[in-house]
Length: 150
Image (cartoon, rainbow, N blue to C red; front, side, top):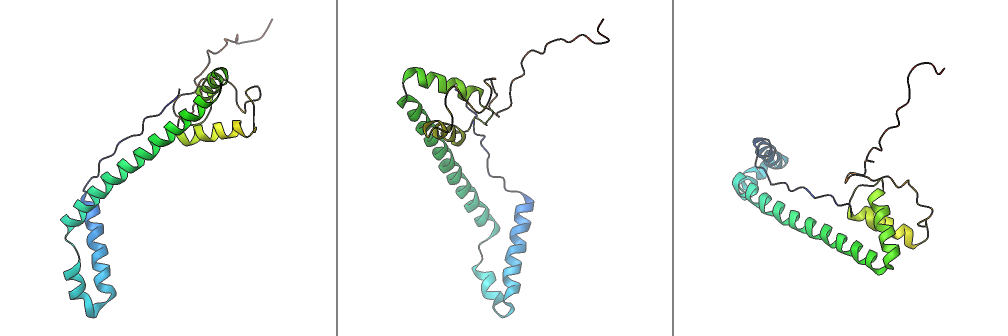
């Protein structure tokens, strides 16, 4: 079954992020000039903010990956619920679908089939294998002679 790995990204503490934080904190102080000293005292340091962002980033990454894995499990459970012939045909159709290999697209494909939007005989696309991004793999081209036909 077509599947696309979800990339992992680490949080990067960059000078641009730190300068944006400084500008944000400066604007907060300038918004209330009479309270600027108090506001500046209550603002966390750059290091504290960047550490918190890194921790939050990691939590969000784990949460997103878990949600995505849950969607894949849900899709596989839906496929298994069909008869073996139907499930095999749906898997083959999914492998040829022009959609990204994403669990949400697979669930939508299965939903469309279950509500009768299309049948296995009337798929909304041709059965040409696709890569994980949904790009059709090229079929061998038929060579056409060049020049005038005699």
